[in-house]
Length: 363
Image 1: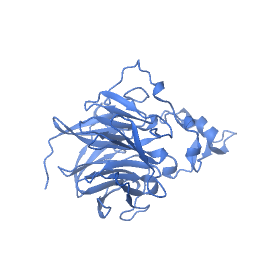
Image 2: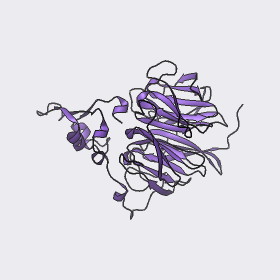
Image 3: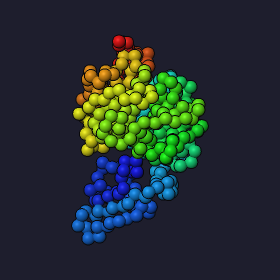
Image 4: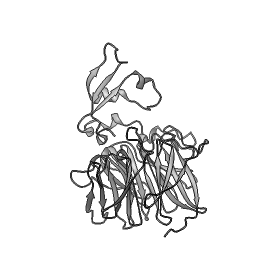
Protein backbone atom coordinates (compact mmCIF):
# COMPACT_ATOMS: atom_id res chain seq x y z
CA UNK A 1 0.00 0.00 0.00
CA UNK A 2 1.67 3.20 -1.14
CA UNK A 3 -0.99 5.90 -0.91
CA UNK A 4 -2.60 4.60 2.28
CA UNK A 5 0.77 4.84 4.04
CA UNK A 6 1.40 8.41 2.82
CA UNK A 7 4.17 7.29 0.47
CA UNK A 8 4.71 9.83 -2.33
CA UNK A 9 7.96 8.52 -3.80
CA UNK A 10 9.61 5.14 -4.33
CA UNK A 11 13.42 4.88 -4.32
CA UNK A 12 15.32 1.87 -5.66
CA UNK A 13 19.08 1.29 -5.66
CA UNK A 14 21.41 -1.65 -6.32
CA UNK A 15 21.21 -2.76 -2.70
CA UNK A 16 17.48 -3.30 -3.10
CA UNK A 17 17.79 -4.78 -6.59
CA UNK A 18 20.35 -7.36 -5.51
CA UNK A 19 18.99 -8.10 -2.04
CA UNK A 20 16.66 -10.97 -1.22
CA UNK A 21 14.66 -9.11 1.43
CA UNK A 22 12.18 -7.71 -1.12
CA UNK A 23 10.35 -10.15 -3.36
CA UNK A 24 8.85 -9.30 -6.76
CA UNK A 25 10.43 -5.83 -7.02
CA UNK A 26 8.81 -5.18 -10.44
CA UNK A 27 10.94 -2.11 -11.17
CA UNK A 28 9.69 -2.21 -14.76
CA UNK A 29 6.19 -1.40 -13.49
CA UNK A 30 7.47 1.78 -11.85
CA UNK A 31 9.39 2.78 -14.99
CA UNK A 32 6.38 2.24 -17.24
CA UNK A 33 3.70 3.85 -15.08
CA UNK A 34 5.27 6.21 -12.51
CA UNK A 35 7.00 9.52 -13.22
CA UNK A 36 10.75 9.09 -12.78
CA UNK A 37 12.09 12.20 -11.03
CA UNK A 38 15.71 11.14 -10.57
CA UNK A 39 18.16 8.74 -12.20
CA UNK A 40 21.72 8.24 -10.95
CA UNK A 41 23.27 8.17 -14.43
CA UNK A 42 26.82 8.51 -13.09
CA UNK A 43 26.31 5.72 -10.56
CA UNK A 44 27.32 7.90 -7.63
CA UNK A 45 24.54 6.51 -5.45
CA UNK A 46 24.43 2.81 -6.39
CA UNK A 47 22.19 3.36 -9.42
CA UNK A 48 19.53 5.19 -7.43
CA UNK A 49 16.20 5.73 -9.20
CA UNK A 50 13.32 7.70 -7.67
CA UNK A 51 9.74 7.47 -8.91
CA UNK A 52 6.76 9.64 -8.00
CA UNK A 53 3.63 7.74 -6.94
CA UNK A 54 0.57 8.70 -9.06
CA UNK A 55 -2.23 10.49 -7.26
CA UNK A 56 -4.58 7.70 -8.34
CA UNK A 57 -3.09 4.23 -8.68
CA UNK A 58 -6.28 3.05 -10.37
CA UNK A 59 -4.93 4.85 -13.44
CA UNK A 60 -2.20 2.21 -13.63
CA UNK A 61 -3.39 -0.85 -15.60
CA UNK A 62 -4.12 -3.70 -13.20
CA UNK A 63 -2.51 -6.07 -15.67
CA UNK A 64 0.83 -4.38 -14.98
CA UNK A 65 0.48 -4.38 -11.22
CA UNK A 66 -0.66 -7.98 -10.86
CA UNK A 67 1.83 -10.83 -10.74
CA UNK A 68 -0.13 -13.85 -11.85
CA UNK A 69 -3.51 -15.58 -11.76
CA UNK A 70 -4.77 -19.01 -10.82
CA UNK A 71 -4.02 -20.09 -14.38
CA UNK A 72 -0.33 -19.80 -13.49
CA UNK A 73 -0.58 -22.23 -10.57
CA UNK A 74 0.97 -25.62 -11.33
CA UNK A 75 -1.74 -28.11 -10.39
CA UNK A 76 0.77 -30.94 -10.81
CA UNK A 77 2.51 -29.69 -7.68
CA UNK A 78 0.79 -31.12 -4.56
CA UNK A 79 -0.57 -28.43 -2.24
CA UNK A 80 1.18 -27.88 1.07
CA UNK A 81 -0.26 -27.41 4.53
CA UNK A 82 -0.85 -23.89 5.82
CA UNK A 83 1.46 -24.80 8.69
CA UNK A 84 4.24 -25.53 6.19
CA UNK A 85 3.44 -22.74 3.73
CA UNK A 86 6.49 -21.13 2.19
CA UNK A 87 7.10 -18.23 -0.15
CA UNK A 88 5.49 -18.77 -3.53
CA UNK A 89 2.41 -18.97 -5.71
CA UNK A 90 1.54 -22.66 -5.51
CA UNK A 91 -1.38 -23.96 -3.47
CA UNK A 92 -0.71 -23.52 0.24
CA UNK A 93 2.18 -21.12 -0.36
CA UNK A 94 1.97 -17.42 0.40
CA UNK A 95 3.40 -14.06 -0.59
CA UNK A 96 3.28 -11.59 2.30
CA UNK A 97 0.06 -13.01 3.82
CA UNK A 98 -1.70 -10.38 5.89
CA UNK A 99 -5.07 -11.60 7.20
CA UNK A 100 -6.54 -14.76 8.73
CA UNK A 101 -10.08 -15.76 9.75
CA UNK A 102 -12.02 -18.88 10.73
CA UNK A 103 -15.58 -20.00 10.02
CA UNK A 104 -17.97 -21.80 12.38
CA UNK A 105 -16.51 -25.18 11.37
CA UNK A 106 -12.98 -24.05 12.18
CA UNK A 107 -11.85 -23.78 8.57
CA UNK A 108 -9.19 -21.13 7.98
CA UNK A 109 -9.13 -18.34 5.40
CA UNK A 110 -5.89 -16.54 4.63
CA UNK A 111 -5.68 -13.22 2.78
CA UNK A 112 -2.65 -13.84 0.57
CA UNK A 113 -1.71 -10.22 -0.10
CA UNK A 114 1.10 -10.61 -2.64
CA UNK A 115 -0.83 -13.19 -4.66
CA UNK A 116 -4.09 -11.20 -4.46
CA UNK A 117 -6.19 -14.20 -3.48
CA UNK A 118 -7.89 -15.94 -0.56
CA UNK A 119 -6.86 -19.48 0.40
CA UNK A 120 -9.05 -21.81 2.45
CA UNK A 121 -7.71 -24.57 4.72
CA UNK A 122 -9.14 -27.15 7.10
CA UNK A 123 -8.66 -26.67 10.86
CA UNK A 124 -5.62 -28.97 10.55
CA UNK A 125 -4.10 -26.83 7.81
CA UNK A 126 -5.02 -28.97 4.79
CA UNK A 127 -5.43 -26.91 1.61
CA UNK A 128 -9.06 -26.84 0.41
CA UNK A 129 -9.46 -24.16 -2.24
CA UNK A 130 -8.53 -20.69 -3.42
CA UNK A 131 -10.59 -17.84 -4.82
CA UNK A 132 -10.02 -14.33 -6.06
CA UNK A 133 -7.62 -13.06 -8.73
CA UNK A 134 -5.66 -9.81 -9.10
CA UNK A 135 -7.61 -6.95 -10.62
CA UNK A 136 -10.13 -4.19 -10.11
CA UNK A 137 -13.36 -5.81 -11.32
CA UNK A 138 -16.05 -7.25 -9.04
CA UNK A 139 -14.63 -10.06 -6.94
CA UNK A 140 -11.03 -9.29 -7.91
CA UNK A 141 -8.46 -8.25 -5.34
CA UNK A 142 -5.48 -5.96 -4.97
CA UNK A 143 -3.57 -6.46 -1.73
CA UNK A 144 -6.29 -8.14 0.37
CA UNK A 145 -5.63 -7.51 4.05
CA UNK A 146 -8.11 -8.17 6.86
CA UNK A 147 -10.71 -10.91 6.52
CA UNK A 148 -13.61 -12.19 8.61
CA UNK A 149 -16.43 -14.75 8.28
CA UNK A 150 -19.95 -14.38 9.67
CA UNK A 151 -22.18 -17.08 11.19
CA UNK A 152 -23.76 -17.79 7.78
CA UNK A 153 -20.38 -18.40 6.18
CA UNK A 154 -20.25 -15.10 4.30
CA UNK A 155 -16.69 -13.86 3.83
CA UNK A 156 -15.70 -10.20 4.09
CA UNK A 157 -12.34 -8.95 2.79
CA UNK A 158 -10.65 -5.57 3.21
CA UNK A 159 -9.49 -5.09 -0.39
CA UNK A 160 -6.87 -2.49 0.48
CA UNK A 161 -5.49 -1.28 -2.84
CA UNK A 162 -8.96 -1.20 -4.41
CA UNK A 163 -10.17 0.83 -1.40
CA UNK A 164 -13.25 -1.28 -0.74
CA UNK A 165 -14.83 -4.00 1.38
CA UNK A 166 -15.88 -7.11 -0.56
CA UNK A 167 -18.42 -9.76 0.42
CA UNK A 168 -18.16 -13.33 -0.90
CA UNK A 169 -20.54 -16.22 -0.29
CA UNK A 170 -19.40 -19.42 1.40
CA UNK A 171 -18.24 -20.81 -1.96
CA UNK A 172 -16.03 -17.81 -2.63
CA UNK A 173 -18.31 -16.21 -5.21
CA UNK A 174 -18.64 -12.43 -5.27
CA UNK A 175 -21.82 -11.00 -3.74
CA UNK A 176 -21.34 -7.35 -2.93
CA UNK A 177 -18.89 -4.53 -2.28
CA UNK A 178 -18.83 -1.23 -0.39
CA UNK A 179 -16.65 1.81 -0.99
CA UNK A 180 -17.31 3.27 2.46
CA UNK A 181 -18.71 6.61 3.66
CA UNK A 182 -17.55 9.84 2.05
CA UNK A 183 -14.90 10.41 0.89
CA UNK A 184 -14.60 6.61 0.65
CA UNK A 185 -12.28 4.00 2.11
CA UNK A 186 -8.57 4.68 1.66
CA UNK A 187 -6.54 1.53 2.18
CA UNK A 188 -8.86 -0.40 4.54
CA UNK A 189 -6.60 -2.65 6.60
CA UNK A 190 -8.87 -4.87 8.71
CA UNK A 191 -12.47 -5.96 9.25
CA UNK A 192 -14.28 -7.68 12.13
CA UNK A 193 -17.84 -8.65 13.02
CA UNK A 194 -19.38 -7.47 16.26
CA UNK A 195 -21.92 -9.25 18.48
CA UNK A 196 -24.48 -6.88 16.96
CA UNK A 197 -23.72 -8.49 13.54
CA UNK A 198 -22.41 -5.18 12.30
CA UNK A 199 -19.09 -4.88 10.49
CA UNK A 200 -16.20 -2.83 11.82
CA UNK A 201 -13.69 -1.72 9.18
CA UNK A 202 -10.30 -0.24 10.03
CA UNK A 203 -9.81 2.45 7.40
CA UNK A 204 -6.08 2.96 7.87
CA UNK A 205 -5.55 5.65 5.24
CA UNK A 206 -8.18 7.88 6.84
CA UNK A 207 -7.25 7.01 10.44
CA UNK A 208 -10.73 5.94 11.41
CA UNK A 209 -12.96 3.00 12.32
CA UNK A 210 -16.08 2.63 10.17
CA UNK A 211 -19.09 0.63 11.36
CA UNK A 212 -21.34 -0.80 8.67
CA UNK A 213 -24.80 -2.23 9.14
CA UNK A 214 -24.93 -4.73 6.25
CA UNK A 215 -28.74 -4.73 6.24
CA UNK A 216 -29.45 -0.99 6.17
CA UNK A 217 -26.03 -0.18 4.68
CA UNK A 218 -25.74 2.75 7.07
CA UNK A 219 -22.26 3.87 8.12
CA UNK A 220 -21.02 5.42 11.34
CA UNK A 221 -17.41 6.32 12.01
CA UNK A 222 -14.96 7.65 14.54
CA UNK A 223 -11.32 8.66 14.66
CA UNK A 224 -8.86 10.95 12.93
CA UNK A 225 -5.09 11.17 12.59
CA UNK A 226 -3.33 12.18 15.78
CA UNK A 227 -2.02 11.09 19.16
CA UNK A 228 -4.95 11.95 21.42
CA UNK A 229 -7.66 9.69 22.79
CA UNK A 230 -9.66 8.25 19.92
CA UNK A 231 -7.09 9.39 17.35
CA UNK A 232 -4.89 7.04 15.32
CA UNK A 233 -1.57 6.91 13.52
CA UNK A 234 -1.19 4.02 11.07
CA UNK A 235 -3.63 1.66 12.84
CA UNK A 236 -3.21 -1.87 11.51
CA UNK A 237 -5.69 -4.19 13.22
CA UNK A 238 -8.83 -4.43 15.29
CA UNK A 239 -10.74 -7.02 17.28
CA UNK A 240 -14.36 -6.94 18.43
CA UNK A 241 -15.61 -9.04 21.30
CA UNK A 242 -18.18 -8.73 24.05
CA UNK A 243 -19.05 -5.05 24.03
CA UNK A 244 -15.58 -3.78 23.16
CA UNK A 245 -13.60 -2.75 20.09
CA UNK A 246 -9.81 -3.05 20.38
CA UNK A 247 -7.60 -1.17 17.91
CA UNK A 248 -3.87 -1.74 17.43
CA UNK A 249 -2.74 1.85 16.98
CA UNK A 250 0.66 0.85 15.64
CA UNK A 251 2.60 4.08 15.08
CA UNK A 252 1.34 5.43 18.43
CA UNK A 253 2.64 2.22 20.08
CA UNK A 254 -0.59 1.60 21.93
CA UNK A 255 -3.88 -0.27 22.06
CA UNK A 256 -7.08 1.73 22.28
CA UNK A 257 -10.39 0.35 23.55
CA UNK A 258 -13.87 1.61 22.62
CA UNK A 259 -17.44 0.54 23.17
CA UNK A 260 -19.42 -0.70 20.17
CA UNK A 261 -20.54 2.86 19.36
CA UNK A 262 -17.01 4.26 19.33
CA UNK A 263 -16.90 5.82 22.79
CA UNK A 264 -13.33 5.84 24.10
CA UNK A 265 -12.79 3.67 27.20
CA UNK A 266 -9.07 3.25 27.79
CA UNK A 267 -5.64 2.82 26.23
CA UNK A 268 -2.29 1.30 27.12
CA UNK A 269 1.20 1.40 25.68
CA UNK A 270 2.87 -1.52 23.93
CA UNK A 271 6.63 -0.89 24.23
CA UNK A 272 7.42 -3.96 22.12
CA UNK A 273 6.24 -2.12 19.03
CA UNK A 274 8.47 0.35 17.24
CA UNK A 275 7.02 3.13 15.11
CA UNK A 276 10.17 3.11 13.00
CA UNK A 277 9.79 -0.48 11.83
CA UNK A 278 7.41 -1.92 9.25
CA UNK A 279 5.08 -4.27 11.08
CA UNK A 280 1.38 -5.06 11.23
CA UNK A 281 0.18 -5.79 14.78
CA UNK A 282 -3.28 -7.27 15.06
CA UNK A 283 -5.49 -8.46 17.90
CA UNK A 284 -7.90 -11.28 18.78
CA UNK A 285 -10.17 -11.19 21.84
CA UNK A 286 -11.42 -14.18 23.82
CA UNK A 287 -14.67 -12.79 25.24
CA UNK A 288 -15.17 -15.78 27.53
CA UNK A 289 -11.74 -15.69 29.14
CA UNK A 290 -11.49 -11.91 28.69
CA UNK A 291 -8.03 -12.16 27.18
CA UNK A 292 -6.62 -10.09 24.37
CA UNK A 293 -3.95 -11.62 22.13
CA UNK A 294 -1.79 -9.14 20.24
CA UNK A 295 1.03 -9.77 17.75
CA UNK A 296 4.40 -8.06 17.92
CA UNK A 297 6.28 -8.49 14.66
CA UNK A 298 9.44 -6.78 15.89
CA UNK A 299 9.88 -9.13 18.87
CA UNK A 300 8.32 -12.19 17.16
CA UNK A 301 5.81 -12.95 19.89
CA UNK A 302 2.15 -12.82 20.85
CA UNK A 303 1.44 -10.61 23.86
CA UNK A 304 -1.41 -11.56 26.18
CA UNK A 305 -3.40 -8.96 28.14
CA UNK A 306 -6.58 -8.90 30.15
CA UNK A 307 -9.36 -6.59 28.98
CA UNK A 308 -8.02 -3.78 31.17
CA UNK A 309 -4.54 -3.87 29.65
CA UNK A 310 -2.72 -5.82 32.35
CA UNK A 311 0.04 -7.97 30.86
CA UNK A 312 -0.57 -11.66 31.56
CA UNK A 313 1.75 -13.65 29.35
CA UNK A 314 3.81 -13.86 26.18
CA UNK A 315 3.76 -16.63 23.58
CA UNK A 316 7.26 -16.74 22.13
CA UNK A 317 8.46 -20.17 21.02
CA UNK A 318 12.18 -20.07 20.27
CA UNK A 319 12.68 -23.39 18.50
CA UNK A 320 11.94 -24.12 14.85
CA UNK A 321 9.43 -24.73 13.35
CA UNK A 322 7.25 -23.17 16.06
CA UNK A 323 9.26 -19.94 16.18
CA UNK A 324 7.27 -16.95 14.97
CA UNK A 325 8.52 -14.92 12.00
CA UNK A 326 7.08 -11.39 11.78
CA UNK A 327 3.61 -12.41 12.99
CA UNK A 328 0.76 -10.18 11.86
CA UNK A 329 -2.86 -11.33 11.91
CA UNK A 330 -4.26 -13.92 14.32
CA UNK A 331 -7.58 -15.60 15.05
CA UNK A 332 -9.15 -17.67 17.83
CA UNK A 333 -11.16 -20.75 16.87
CA UNK A 334 -12.88 -23.59 18.69
CA UNK A 335 -11.46 -27.11 18.36
CA UNK A 336 -12.15 -30.46 20.03
CA UNK A 337 -9.23 -29.80 22.36
CA UNK A 338 -10.56 -26.36 23.25
CA UNK A 339 -9.48 -22.95 22.02
CA UNK A 340 -6.88 -22.66 19.30
CA UNK A 341 -4.93 -19.56 18.41
CA UNK A 342 -3.82 -19.40 14.78
CA UNK A 343 -1.06 -16.88 14.05
CA UNK A 344 -0.14 -15.74 10.56
CA UNK A 345 3.59 -15.28 9.96
CA UNK A 346 3.96 -12.63 7.28
CA UNK A 347 7.74 -13.04 7.19
CA UNK A 348 7.74 -16.83 7.37
CA UNK A 349 4.79 -17.23 4.97
CA UNK A 350 3.05 -19.86 7.10
CA UNK A 351 0.51 -20.30 9.90
CA UNK A 352 1.43 -21.21 13.48
CA UNK A 353 -1.03 -22.79 15.89
CA UNK A 354 -1.19 -22.65 19.69
CA UNK A 355 -3.40 -25.02 21.67
CA UNK A 356 -4.92 -22.91 24.44
CA UNK A 357 -7.14 -25.59 25.95
CA UNK A 358 -10.45 -24.84 27.59
CA UNK A 359 -11.11 -21.16 28.21
CA UNK A 360 -12.23 -20.44 31.75
CA UNK A 361 -14.82 -17.68 32.15
CA UNK A 362 -13.43 -14.65 33.97
CA UNK A 363 -15.44 -12.28 36.10
